[in-house]
Length: 114
Length: 110
Image 1 (cartoon, one colour):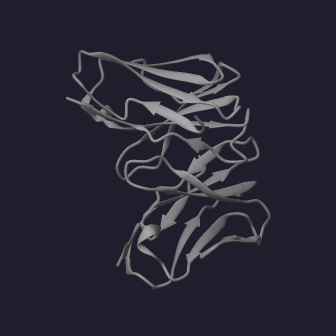
Image 2 (image 1 turned 180 degrees about the horizontal axis):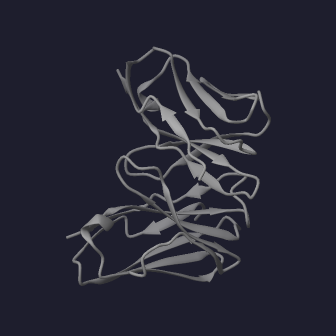
């Protein structure tokens, strides 16, 4: 399978739940990203991984915990979220270290926190 | 913080009409990308422009990068319902980091 695949596509969770989002790419890219997309706001970069190492954390609350076991897989572990965390969470990949040649995005996980 | 402003925020037109959307910043970018995002999907890269004044064409879509590399425009000729979506621009700085605009939502009515 080519491209960037995200699962699940939709997730509803309570504020006390723990869940994980998964992202997988088979493009040979070495950089992976988590973005948050909320209504009427620009895409917000959350985390960046280059060659499995986290290189950027944009002041994201600790209730979001990323994990990158290898260059092809990226997870976002969620716990004790708030309703305002409801959004579309997008995973993306690119050639290592730069978005100069553009991102390849997954279809996203639509998260609703109740 | 580099900011990108896109205009208009919303655009609703009839099939066959032409349109232009804009992406403006006070910052200089090393390159600029345009993406289209359809409902329920992630953004898809349409084009990257690198040189000031550069014009790129993708079928009915024409992209231009400003001479000073601070702004860009996307022109669509004879819009079709399939062009409906959210159009996002993203400026890339010298460090290879991207800043996204807040998007233009285009609706093309049949």
